Image (cartoon, rainbow, N blue to C red; front, side, top):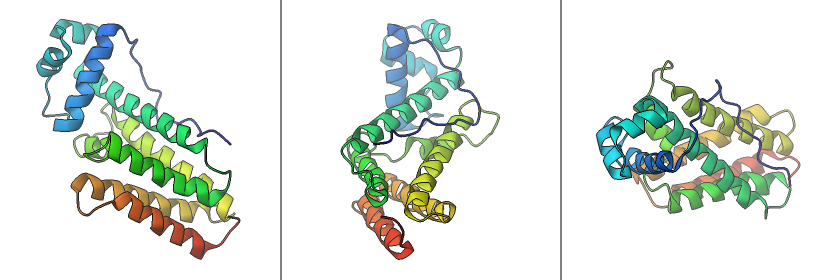
Length: 205
C-alpha cells in the first residue's frame, strides 16, 4: 500500500520545540480553540488551563499567533496519521481508497471532531493571508485536493482534476454539515455519493 503522501504547505511551517510545558499549553489551547473558537480564547485562559504562567507560554511559543499555527499543524498531522493507519487495511484499488478517506473522516468526526473541521472553523476567523496560520489552513485543503485528484486519476486517467474537485466538494461539504449538525451522518451520505460519482465516471476500479 502506498503511504499517504506528505503535505506540501504553501510556506514552510515554523515549529516549536515541544518541552513538557509546551505540550501542556498546546493541549490546552487545542481543546479551548476547538470548543470555543480562536478569537474567543485568550492566552491567560490557556495558561491557566495548562497550569503554566503566561510568561512560560510566551517563552515557548512567542505569540498567540504561533500557538494557533502549532494547534492547526498538530491537528493536521494527527489527521494524516489517522488516515494513514486506516489505509493499511484497504486494498490498493481506487474505489476502496477513495471511500476509505470518507470512512476515516467519519471515524474522525465521531471520535475527535464533533464540532466539524478545525481548518474550516479556523478559516471563519482567519482570512488574512498575512496571518502565520493561513498557509496551514489553505495548505491542508490543498493537500486534500491533491489526494483526491491523485486517487481520481488512478480511477479515470485524464479526469483526475475534474473528479478530484467533485470528491473534495463532497468531502468538505459533509464536514460542514457535520459541524452544523444539519442531518445525521453527512459524511457517510457523502461517501455513497462519492461511490456514485465514481460509478458514473467509469474507470479502472
